[in-house]
Length: 105
Image (cartoon, rainbow, N blue to C red):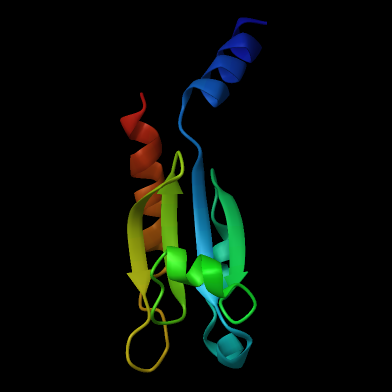
């Protein structure tokens, strides 16, 4: 019972981490397929052609772009290179997410 209480308290007291993958349908072959495999975070996808206001708000100028938000604030960004391919790996992002989670302990 004590473990369950601790888990509930821990899940509500730490900041929410959201990973947002910005891309466009025309660049679908270069999307980061592995984003959905990330753990301990919420994952959202934005098609910049369908959501230009969100693109402008977050100043996304190249796709794909992956932004990590903590408590609604941007904390890290990875952008594609000139070939429209993201150079970050799933391991890079998961390591960063894990570091954010450990900061809260």
